[in-house]
Length: 304
Length: 304
Image 1 (cartoon, rainbow over the protein chains, first blue to last red):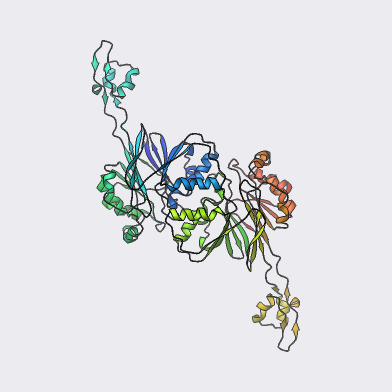
Image 2 (image 1 turned 30 degrees about the vertical axis):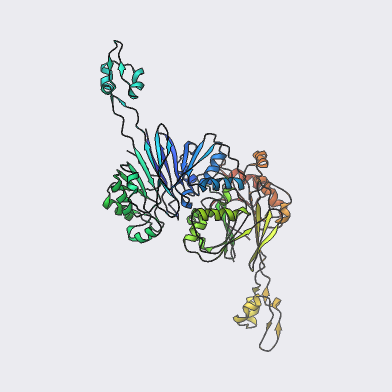
């Protein structure tokens, strides 16, 4: 089952001719989630041929324009094109009011179930818990209330040990129960323990989205052992003072967070418009944490 | 002196992979005006290498998202990049509140003079009158309060008749006064009438921006004799019923308005996303009004 992250935007506040503000599509076991929605996100979805009709939830980290100004336009398009399935939106409190104000002034009547869920930056919270995954919101330290998000897959089904099952001539009809952990009783009444017929399920995977924030050590505990860590890296470390002033991070901060949290893979994003060439940002992170990558738009990262 | 219109966006409500929502740059005698500001306008400015620092005013026709959702992002970028000259914004009343709400929630402090001017859809009004041009707001007939805008150049300076001036050995230092219509008195005290030394100034030019609206005959009187008429043409005439229902126009409506008003040139825009090929829209207008053109993004139309 897929668990992957597609980058739609990687610029910070000011876009450049070829970099758009923050947006990502997270495909977690065929549930599509839009993570942040900077201006132009609906165009990026068109560009990368991702249908907005497949998106079931949108998460907004905070109300700086480069993280949510594409939302009203996207919602209008979704509405216009006749959606009738629910859409869940998670974000800071004023978001609902701002969206409804726009609908009000533009005379738009929303024709599908739009459900708002308020996120808080005071404490971490489990905000989604379904059969496939959990999502935890994590307070970050930025200039305005901001949360990161941790997506944790739930443990999947056990894997059939084909050789063992064939050896006992177990009919396929029993495989689903075996995957779910049940023992097998043969026609003679002998019970075969599940552990002899299946292997343990794949390890649950996890993805953390950390943007925007200054570096703070306590964050590591919240995302301990994450498989894929996206971490903002607005400025090179030579602008560390500027990063501190504006509550942003550098590639060194991001790499240190990857090390501290025991992350397996690191993706850097939210690049300042001042950097035309991004390789110095990557190099800076790789010195500390080799498995680092740039959030180039269009790139799809597998969480594994 | 230039008077030209550059198209930055030509889609209607839903953008396509290669068409952006409404936005135009009007250069009227070296004053740059942004006309509507759909989502992604700041990227289109980057794409066509037009510096936002040159824009002195922004006009918003109405509060449907495809006409103004790029404004907050553009203003944030302008602010971020250290502007200190004033910027005037003309639009319907709730616009100011919506912009200030966003600044408030995003913790943005605007560091340059941002001046709001409310437009009204009850009656036409002269909303700008400076030494170079006038702007008139014109009520349109759409689903929410909407205005079009007429940009009218003022009469320029008279043109020097070089032969006549050289014949009298008039020093250059007097040319400015001659251009302004004054007579010339030679060193012997003889008065030479201005009309013998200069030719009449070029005829003042005009541009009308008409979007979005249903067709209504009374509009023609407001834009009588306009040199360049931009008129929305959302649907082909075969969807006339849909156009009426949604208070939009067809290329036939636009061409009829060009004929009725005595316009010299017509530009069609605001195309529905259903049309991949736009030539049928153009052909439909050209049957009635030959000097019709499509508002293809990047095209610059001279007003003359």
